[in-house]
Every structure is written in structure tokens, then in C-alpha cells.
Image (cartoon, rainbow, N blue to C red; front, side, top):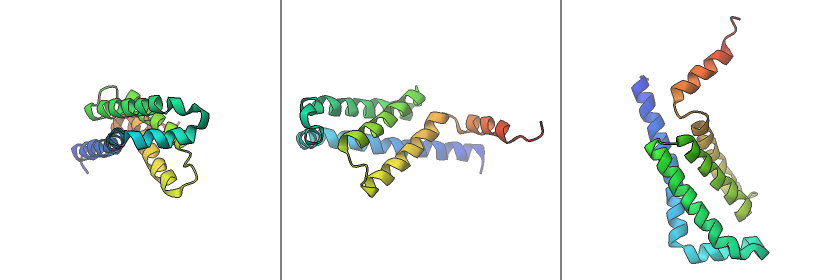
Length: 135
């Protein structure tokens, strides 16, 4: 495949990954009351901060996704989204739900690719030095 075709694949992958987070942010916003109640139930005595945490998640998902879509500060955006995934795992306490775990594992894998390199060709050049056995 040509470099231009690979660049299109990389861009499409980035768009699809960010849509996951934009969809979640919109869902939390539209179902605000039930989300606050659910998270408040998970937090127990820390129930009053549920709204603040959900608002932080919405802002991080929106800003992180936007930065990835615009390819501006993409590493910061990817780290923000990784923080959202980690926060959701801890706060929703669904760690042992296999569907939740597999979804998060796939999303984390995609974000790790974005964090390690905002340009797939740069990552390839970095890794090619590791594979060189001619020294």
C-alpha cells in the first residue's frame, strides 16, 4: 500500500476512535440525571462530587477528541482520553465485566498507538533502529 493510502487509514482510524468518545460524552450529557445517580451510587460517601467528575469526563472527551481530529496537540488529547478510560474503569467499577474490559482494552490499544506517535512513519523509523543487528 502506498504511503498516501496508509496515511488515509491512519486518519480514518483516528476519526473512528474519537467518535467513541464523542458519542459517550453526548450520551452522558443527554442522560445527565441517570448518570449522576449511577455514579453517585458507585461513589458512596463521595456522591456529591459525581456531577463534577462527569463534567470533567465530558470536557476531557470533547477537548481530547477535538485535538485528535484537528491533529493539534494530539498527544495531550490522547492522554486526556486515556485518563477518561482509566477514570471510568475506577469509578464505574465494571472491571470484571468482560464486555466493558474488552471494549476498554481495544480503546486503550488505539490510544497507545496515538500516544506513541502522532505520525505512523515516525514510529516506523524509531522501531527500525531497534531491529538493526548490523552493529
